Amino acid sequence: MNIFSTILALLFSVAEVCRSHSEFRNFIPNGYSVPNPCTANATDICSYVGHLNDTHLNKFGEDFRVVMEKPGMTLGRVWRTLCMLDSDGDKIKNGDELGDSRCQWRYGMANPSKPRDDRFRLSHPGIPENFNRRVSIANYSKYCLNNFFN
Image 1 (cartoon, rainbow, N blue to C red):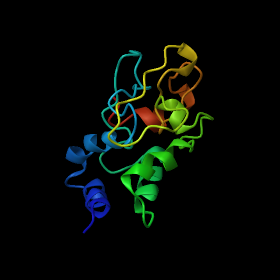
Image 2: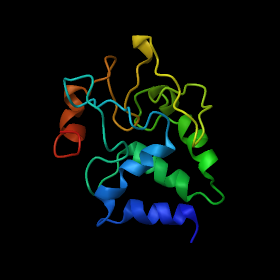
Image 3: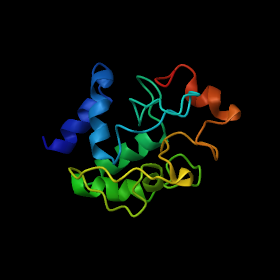
Image 4: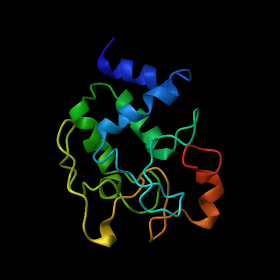
């Protein structure tokens, strides 16, 4: 069993899902700094970037799974592939949301510097947010109730 099969087995094991979420944040830039768009406190950080709850992935989590399952995928190519996507459909590509707009970050590298300009703040790649990096009222119940974010 290769490393990718092992990672996928952990990711989709319902019994292990709560314990395995956080380690996947190592595969994306600024994975431990993703803001929680479901709270009023702009400094709250998401612990589970690819999940809505114990059993459901958000769109970023689904894209992550699809990329990891591709034949011949390597850790070095996972982020390059995810970076160019706009998983949550908010018209901001994943790389921009996670502070790597040029898609240059690679697994094992230091995180890219956090943007200083408010127009380019880190945001959540799996939850569509509005211009101020918060979930709209229309999407609040879908993404923020009964999940890891509240």
